[in-house]
Amino acid sequence: MRDQLNPIVEKIALLKTSHPANIAVQCFDPEYFGSLDSGLQQRLLDCMRSGLDNPDSEMGCYACLVDDYEVLRPFFAKAISRYHGIDDQSHHVSDWTVPQGDMLDITKFGLPALSLRIRVGRNFADLPLTSAMTLQDRTSLETRMAAVFERLQSNPELAGTYVSLTPGHPNQLTKPEYEKLVADHVIFKAMDADPYLISAGIAGDWPHGRGCYFTRDHSFIVWVGEEDHLRIMCMKKGTKLKLVLDQLHSALQIIERSADSPFARSNDFGTVTTCPTNLGTGMRASIHLNLPHLTAGGSVDRVKEIAAPLGLGIRGMGGEHTPIGADGTVDVSPRARLCITEGEIVSRLYEGIGQLIEAERRLASD
Ligand code: ADP
Ligand code: MG
Image (tube, helix red, strand yellow):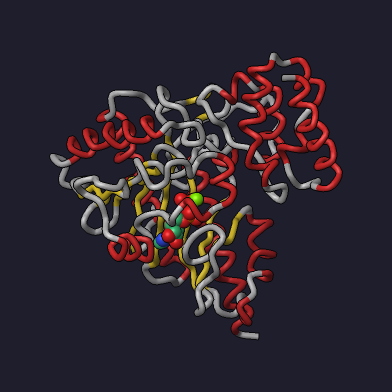
C-alpha cells in the first residue's frame, strides 16, 4: 500500500508548487498523511480525487462520507478555514431572522419584480454523500424522497409533481421535457459533462436516482441526487427577498419533518454538504439582475470588480460556469455560506443589489 501511495504524495508535492490556488493540495500535510493508517490515507485521497485530476480546481476536495469533516478534521479544518476566510476555531450558528427586520423589498432601489431564488443543500445523515453513493444508494434516495413528496401533497403550498431522470422510472422525463425544465431553471444541468463532478464520483451512475420535485408555479423546487442529496429552493419573480426566505424556511422544516431520517449536521461546520464551499448554511441566495452598462461589450470583469469587495459572486444565466445574458443580465449572490446566518446572507444580497444598481446608474448617466 505504502509503495502505491508514494507516487501520489510525490505528485501532490509537485502540484503544491505548480498550483498555488488549489486549496486541497496546499492544505495536504505529508506528515499528517503519514500518520494515518492505510484506510484513512485512502479516504483522504478519495476526498482529494477531483482536485488531483483537475489541478485548476479552487477547493480541490469533496467529502465522501458525512463524517469525513470530523474523521479527517486536521485536513478539512485547514481547507475550510482557508476557503471561507475564518479561523479554525470558528463555530457556525444558524439564524433565519433578517437583521433589519424588514421585507428587504428591492422596489426601494427602484427595481421591478425580478427573479429571486434561494436554495439550500441538505444531506441525509444515514447515507454516503453523492461522491460515494452506490447505484443502490442513489435509487434508495429517490425511493425515500417519493414517500416524502407523497406526504407534501396534502399541503396546498407545497403540493407538486415529481419527475425522474432514472431510465424506466414511471415519471421519467423525455429529452425535450428535460431540456425545457433546464432552460426554465427548474432542474439541474446534465452532470456527466462536468469533469470535476465526474472525478469526484458525484456524477456516478448518471442519470440514475436523479429527479426533481416542483409546484405548478415552480416557486418550490427540490432537486434529488445533484451535488447534495437534496437541493431545496424557493424561486419566484418578486420584489421581497424576505418572503422567499421565509417560504424556504418553512418548507425546509416541513421536508425535514416528513423525512424519516435527519439531515447531517456538524457541531462546528453547521449543515454538512458534499462540497466544503457550501458548509454552514448550504445556502445560495441569488437574483437575476440586468446590468447592461457594467457588462458592456459582454465582459463581466467590471461587475466582478465591484461585486467582489461586497462579498458577492457573479454567475451566468444558466448558473455556475455559464455565460451571462446577451442583454447584460447576471446572477448575483453572496459568496459566504459558513459562519454567517441565513438572514445575514439574504441581507447581504439586498445591500449588494442596492450598490450594484447604483454603480450601473452612475455609469449610465456618465
Ligand atoms: P446552485 O449551485 O446554487 O444550485 P447553479 O449556479 O448551479 O446554482 O444554478 C442552478 C440553476 O438555477 C440554473 O438554471 C440557474 O440559472 C438557476 N438560477 C440561479 N439563480 C436564479 C435566479 N435568481 N432566478 C432564476 N434562476 C436562477
Ligand atoms: Mg451548483
